[in-house]
Image (cartoon, rainbow, N blue to C red; front, side, top):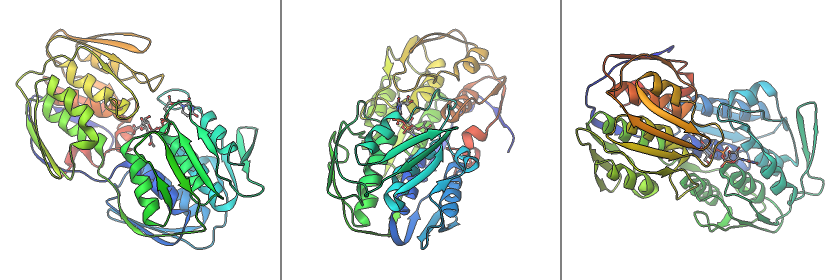
Length: 407
Ligand code: EPU
C-alpha cells in the first residue's frame, strides 16, 4: 500500500479487536533465542518489525515460522552470533538482540546503530549495564564486537534513567547468567512485565518487574513455551483517539483499563466518557474535544511518549490551548508540520509545543515522518474537512496491522 486516502468528517463507530503489542513481541522474540526447544507466540501482530525480528532469528540459525498471528521459534543449532547490517536496518531497535545473543553464545557482532527518525539512538547505557555483567566491547568501522570471556555474571546495576530497551537487554542477559542481578531504576512499562511473564513461563527466576527494582537469579536453562503476547496498548490508545477526534463511540476489545490509566485520565479531561469493563473499554466522545493545559511525557506510569503525537492530533481539533512537553525523545515533534499544513497553529520551542485550534482541520497531502506521527496524521485526516492523503505509510505499517481495515 502506497498511501492512505481519508475522506474526513465521519464519526467513527464500532468495535475493534486489538492484536499483540509490537514492543512486547520484539523482546520476547529475542528471548526465544535463550530457550531450548520450541516457543510458540500467539497474538503476534503481522508487522514489518516482527517480520524483521524473525529474519534475524532465522539468520542466527533458529527455525522460525509465521502462521497468521502465531510465530513459532525453534532453537536447534545456532550458526551465527553476528547480525548483518542489512538485517539491523530492517528494524528500528535491533539492539534488543544484544543481551539475548550474548546470553546464548557469549559473543555478538552488530553494526553500531545510527540515528533514526526520533533522533540519535545512543546505546551507551545498554553497553554500560552489560559491561558490569562481564561483557567487553570494541567498536571499529561502525561495527560493535562484544565478547564475554567467562560467561555473563550477575551484577548490581543502576540505570541513570528507566530505559525500556536497556531494562530488556539486562533481563535477557541476566536470565542465564551466573548468580543474581539486581537492576535498580528499571523501566516499569507493561511490556517489561510481559517479557518477565514470558521468561518466567520458560523457567526464569525474575521478581519485581513493574516496580523500580528487578531481581533476576540466573538459571541453567530455559525451556521454550507457548505464550500469548499482551494487547497493543498504544494501538488501543490510537483507536480511542480516532473515535475521540471524530466525536464517535468505540469499544476496544481485548484491553483492560489498567495499563493505560494514565492516558484515560487525560482522555476524560478532553471531555470523553470512558466506561471500562473486564477485557474491554468503551469510549463516547463529545461533539467537540476540550484542550488539556499540559501533557508531559514520562516513563511509565507517566504519560507515554508514544501517545504524544496521537494527543496532539486530537487537541489540534479541540477548543482552547494545549501544551505538550516531550521528555523522552529529542526529535519527536516531526508530525507538527503536517498539522500546521492542515490549519493548526503550533509553536515549538525545544521540548515544548503549544497547540491552538484556529479553525477546522482541512484535508491536504502530507507525509508520515515516523510511526506514531503517521498514525496521528491519520487521526487528523479523519476529523478534517475534505480529503487527506498520507504518503510514506510504511512508517505506519511498522506498528499498526492494516489500520484502514482493522476488524
Ligand atoms: N537513550 C540513551 N542512551 C541509551 C539508550 C537510550 O540516551 O543507552 C535515550 C534514547 O535516545 C531515548 C530515550 O533514552 O531518547 C528512551 O530510550 P528507551 O531505551 O527507553 O527507548 P527504546 O527502548 O529505544 C522503547 C519503545 C519505543 C518507546 C520507548 C519509550 C520498543 C521497540 N520501542 O524504545 O517505542 O517510545 O521505549 O521509552 O520497545 C514506538 O513504538 O513507536 C516506539 C518508539
